[in-house]
Amino acid sequence: MTDALKNLLYRMADDALILAHRHSEWTGLGPLLEEDIAFSSIAQDKLGHAQALYTILHGLGEPEPDTAAFMRNAEQFTCCHFVELPNGEYDFSLVRHYLYDAAEMIRYRALAESTYQPLAALARKVTGELKYHLYHAQTWFVQLSAKGSEESAARMQSALNEAWPYALGMFEPAAGDAELSAQGVYPGEEAIKAAWLDAVMETLAQAKLVVPSQAEPVYGGRKGYHTDYLQPLLDEMTEVFRIDPAAEW
Amino acid sequence: MATIISLDPRITRAQIESYDPADVQPKPDLDQFITFEVFHQAKSGARHIHVGSVHAPNSDMALLMAKEQFGRRGQTHNIWVVCTEDVVTMHANDADIFATTPEKVYRDVAAYMVRNKVEAFKKEQRGDTKE
Image 1 (cartoon, one colour):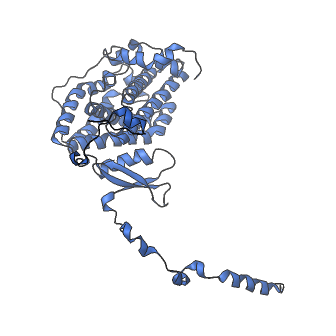
Image 2 (image 1 turned 90 degrees about the vertical axis):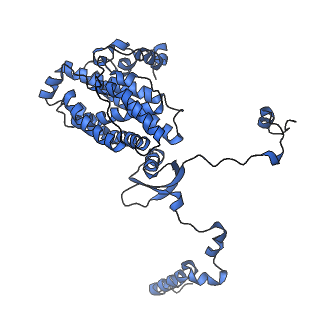
Image 3 (image 1 turned 90 degrees about the horizontal axis):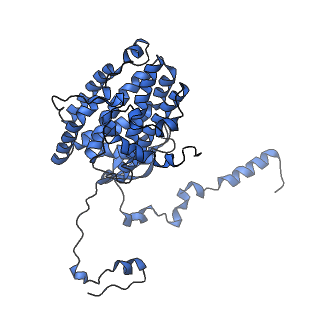
């Protein structure tokens, strides 16, 4: 079971780390002062989630959290393509923030009931943060679509069209899922995706946006195949760490 | 046009040209959002205390911004936001209606020197005749 569990932990941790970095790229550039602070603080929370997951992995014999985060190459990462994509305009960043956090909420709610205690404890600990992230994402999402101007609604729809195939890629089937599900550790990506679709459809109806038809999920990230955007992100993220990996911080 | 000579180095450095005040165009209306006043409650049952304001297009967004600005640090149980325009207030020029004339101090609790009488009574009860 350990391999399946490690695989789950790595893909969750890598998603959180990479998206945290993307979110943090908005620091100082956000559209409003308050929003700049909010987005940065959410990025920090995500980084914290990644650290907690790498710490659990370390307990299972994997490298130290800093080593796991900063010393791997792109092909060793198992994040989905969705989190690697550049921020683009704020519309795309917000759509990604919403679609990702809607999934995180469902995933962590399920994990709160996990038979694997370290993960269940973490899930219970971060519930409040995730609730806030989703509340933040959802409020903006509906504000800029149904409650916004014609232009903002059009931009949100076009960002959604762009994001959707990648968002579906978050739920790339994993080989160990059946085993984890049988052991009561994690219900598996199919189950999370079904619950996610229900939740997202409700919000999309509120936002008066429509799901693009015939969208094929973008897979590959979980197997180490990535977009060309990941390596430059890693180079930048690890720039300081690599100067002296043994340094005490 | 001549450049403004100022003791403030920023102005001199900016090389602002002197101008005729009559040529100055009025500023356009602010393109900012409206403001909401934020009231912070630290614990369940505690008072909501006014802590500041946020800019937002509507109350949903104001609550979201207020959560981040005023609920991020320290203990928070709840937050209220109220549209600044909905706050009813006295006119600042009418501040004098709160003034009390010296003749009316008898209406203030502080004006009653009952403590002296209480102390005197206690002394008497103790049989303490010393002044």
